[in-house]
Length: 300
Ligand SMILES: NC(=O)C1=CN([C@@H]2O[C@H](COP(=O)(O)OP(=O)(O)OC[C@H]3O[C@@H](n4cnc5c(N)ncnc54)[C@H](OP(=O)(O)O)[C@@H]3O)[C@@H](O)[C@H]2O)C=CC1
Ligand SMILES: O=C(O)C1=N[C@H](C(=O)O)C[C@H](O)C1
Image (cartoon, rainbow, N blue to C red):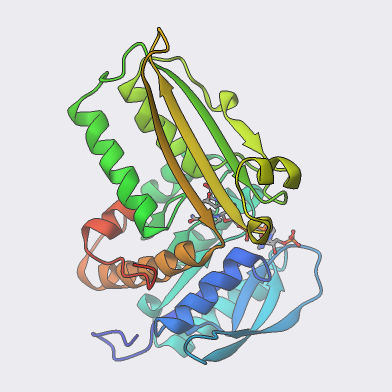
């Protein structure tokens, strides 16, 4: 994707490789005409190495040198070099698919290094994350889910909650979410959906009440196919009336990571356009990206 103003290519530093979500996002960037930065951040205490990212759909590939997050000086120099290679400050953006424990430090790192970012990583201190980025007037897209259809469902739920608050007063809420056993945190998507559902019902539901499934056997019993055990997100939200006579269920089941990766690359393009048109940075959500008509995943 060429930057309309400068004619340079939009370049993306995808952090969190060789994690599966970061790799999927990097492949989607190649597929959607974005260029990968030749350097990226990986977890601490790992030997620097070079990874080849190949997108099977477009046939494009790119080499990326991974630098541990603890090597701050090296990373800062790498960002400066990548920015120069990309043709300027507005042409280098970051994607973050790292670890919940790294969310807040990484956001401060992007702010300190003038790098607009798309934060897909869940967890961390979300209030601090929003406060830090907002105070810095930094350009960012932050969302716990980048899948187009799930973002659309979240937008609809937010509308429902604001138009008909308390429509489910007296109903109790039950939430079960199943993910691959390597996922360390509670689903950020489930938390966001619950925030909307709580406006509709007056149930004293808290995030601690979420039933989390992380084991393979339990996941299969919950309906996850064998091929999804290494990457899935199955969510069921149930609202039940006080006498048990009425029940509503909302379910979204995703196998794999492609839909999030597609949305992430679209979010980069959206943010890149905002850098050209807006004077002041701010935090955008994926609902903003959807509203701008900027989500065009190939799974439509
Ligand atoms: N917004 C969205 O649409 C989606 C969000 N997610 C979120 O994305 C995040 C990543 O998911 P996933 O790839 O499955 O997770 P994994 O834990 O499997 O992978 C994360 C990767 O990041 C590395 N890492 C750990 N700490 C750091 C650090 N400080 N700096 C850079 N890299 C680091 C890990 O290394 P190592 O394993 O060696 O520690 C690993 O390679 C999770 O928070 C998940 O919830 C996932 C899917 C969709
Ligand atoms: O870790 C995952 O896999 C996912 N994480 C996000 C979340 O925490 O909600 C999005 C999706 O559920 C997949």
